Image (cartoon, rainbow, N blue to C red; front, side):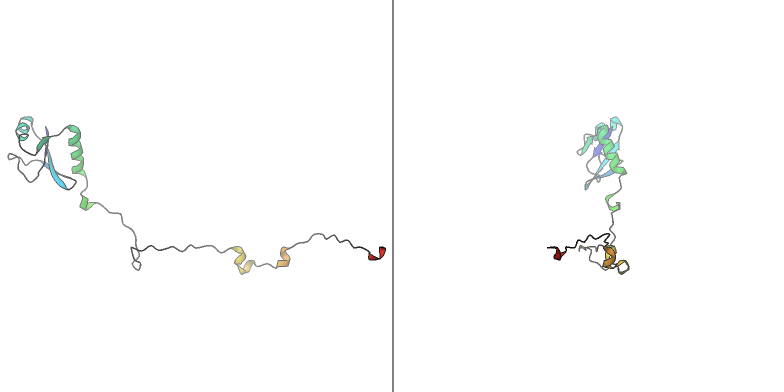
Length: 126
């Protein structure tokens, strides 16, 4: 039979062979006990019978890493900056081709005229 013990610091009718489990902020105990001895333990205050599903849930809690040993995510910080401040990052913009002195062109080279039509009026015809 599978039993849950509310207080791990208590000897239930001399029985202390339970496995301690941290649930939230309190410690409880779980154990598999022979049926005839479990019936006498169930008469004690703080002892309850567990079904298979609940017992497996408590077993998973036993295998979990303790809270104090969990790895925390770290954030890389620079020693010369305040960790509570938010800093704006400077955007690096590539210079455009028109601003570079190598690409400066003569404005006359940029304009091309292929043909010019000119008509002249004769003022003396009149």
